[in-house]
Image 1: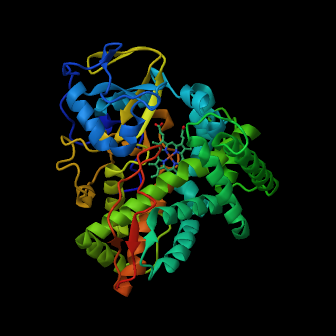
Image 2: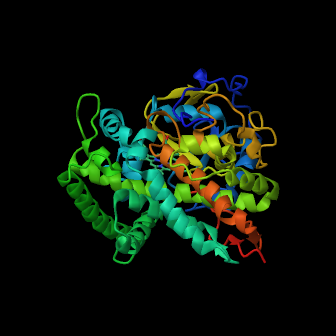
Length: 469
Ligand code: HEM
């Protein structure tokens, strides 16, 4: 396996076994409510729509809905947001933004997105994306010493974990992921807790409550955004004054698109600010799930400990780590397959198009469930089982379906090499820290159900026992 695995590769270029042509949406069960020719998922209630069902158990609820409705049906994320949910991997076509766009992000979450690239399409998006691209390549990450920041951050945290009999794993990995982003941005150690607090406030903007009065989530989000924008603007000004081309921020400041255009000052600040948002809960969730999965699979843990025992020093690049500890990469891929942090990708349809023999109407919101696409039994036998060995010994680049947890098309995750480096290092370092002490992660108590919205992540009450007692 190599670092050249890329979420944007076309399946047509891959050697992965292709499935049969798409299933055409089949006739639906009797008694379903229909809208624009598609069935509405059963169980819709006023105000919440299907949110109560999806947040309780998205995996089973949507599978049941698919059994009743076929692979395309309406889900309501609140009473006013109908999304045509596509359960089949053919639905990944919406991510290509040929007939769809990301305008809904600007409309629905303007305080979260600001002028960041994910809220734009076409030339404006291409400009920001290309100007940032170099910074996020494996080479750019090495130049910016991202591997070193990751190792330092994880090392400090793991020392504190040893001996803890009730470690709340997700809050811990969330701290790691945020701190990694902060260190990449060059934030001083003594400022970290204030930054953490401000980002927590900023994340409140994800709560879909529009009341913007003092003390309410939307107001607190906007206030925190103001604080963060001021600080990020200062980081940008300092890096510019130092003529720093090497750090991640520097590479974004001096990055240019193919016409030689860089990002405006506002775009720079908003895109850099957005990294903390895009790169923390997502990465943290996969790190936490990986540790939880290892706690359930002692035989994989044993093999992992044996692989890391051969490591003299920790490599700072993903490519080298994958070469030396292939099981860390396999654990990462398999965990993200079962638990894609952003399970429901959405787009606004600007031009009607045909999918699986059906006409997807212009003006609709369309979504593809990465959660279900990643558990397609035709592609992954025994799809609900965590089997990292699926990913071992594959001598080809992964295809767009296999890496769909990072999205696809022009907006595919910009930070996927950061995520892969951070998560595989975390997995290897966990085994390196605990293994030689004869410790292994064990679940303390029961595994509580996951949270599905807005991100798929373990409960804050999933605890690990690292005491060895
Ligand atoms: C396991 C960790 C991660 C997962 C699963 C993930 C997933 C995603 C997904 C699904 C998208 C949307 C793609 C689309 O709409 O097609 C996205 C976009 C993005 N991600 Fe990530 N992400 C992760 C980590 C990161 C990290 C660590 C960073 C940066 C440090 C990052 C930065 C971004 C940015 C900037 C975008 C917007 C790209 C654009 O609109 O062009 N992500 N990510």
